[in-house]
Amino acid sequence: MRTLVVGDIHGGLRGLEQALDRLSPKVGDRFIYVGDYVDGWSDNAETVAFLIDFSKTYNCIFLRGNHDELVYNYLKFDDDRPMWLAHGGESSRQSYARLSRKEIAVHIDFYEALENYYIDTNNRLFLHAGFTDQKGPQYEFAPHNVYWDRTLWEMVCSLDDTLSESDEKYPKRLKLFSEIYIGHTPVTRIGHTKPVNFANVWNVDTGAAFKGPLTIMEVNTKEIWQSDPVWTLYPEEEGRN
Image 1: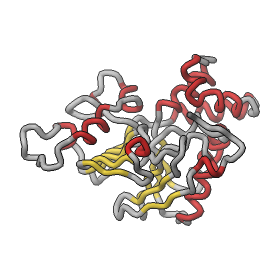
Image 2 (image 1 turned 60 degrees about the vertical axis):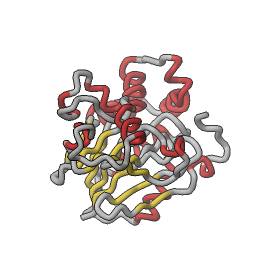
Image 3 (image 1 turned 120 degrees about the horizontal axis):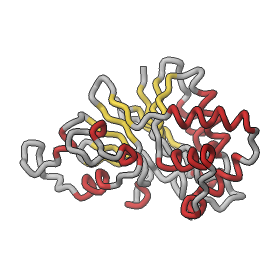
Image 4 (image 1 turned 30 degrees about the vertical axis):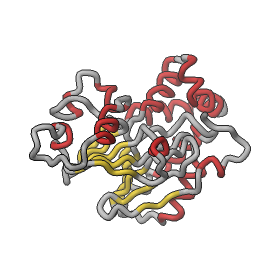
C-alpha cells in the first residue's frame, strides 16, 4: 500500500486530475490531502465534488486548510469578508453560485468532517500549516493554529543544518515526530517547484495556486508525481496574484 500526500490544490482540479493520471492510483493506495482545496482557480466546488467522489473508491484522509475554513464560513454563515474575497475567495463564491442548496449541503458536510491533523502508525504527522505547542498539535490552545501557523516552516527554513537532535538548541517540536508533512506556504517562494525538506519537515505545497505545479508524493520512497504548472492549464484565467 502506498501512502500518498497531496499538496494544496486551490481549485486547480485540472492539475489534480493530471497528477493523478500520471500516478495511476491503485485501490490499495492511501491518500492524505493536506488541505486548501479551494480559493484559487475556477474549479473550487468542482474540486470538492471530485474529492467526495474520489473517496468512494480510495482510502482518503482530508485535512483542513485555512482556505477551507474560510469557504465553510461563507457557505454556513454567509461570511464573505473582503480579505477572503481578495485572496481567492471570489473564485470560490462564483463557483458555488452554480450549485443547488442540496449540493451545497453535501459540501458543508465535507468541510465539517475535515481533520485538523493526522498521525499515522509510523509517528508521521500530517497537517496543513504547523503547530506551536512543544507537546504537539493536540495541545494547541487555539486549534485553528494548525491550519494557519507559519512559524514551524519559518523555523526549519532558518535552522542550522549542523544542529543535531541531541543539541539543547534543537527545537523540541521536531523531536515529537519521525516526519512532519505540511502545505500552506508555497515552496515557490524560496525558488523551488518540488517538495522541500528541512530537518524532518516536508513541505508539499509546490505553488499550484500561483505559478507552480500540483504535487503528489509517496511518503515512504519520496517519489513524486506532478502536474504541469497549474496556471498553464487555466490559460483563460488570471488566478491569484
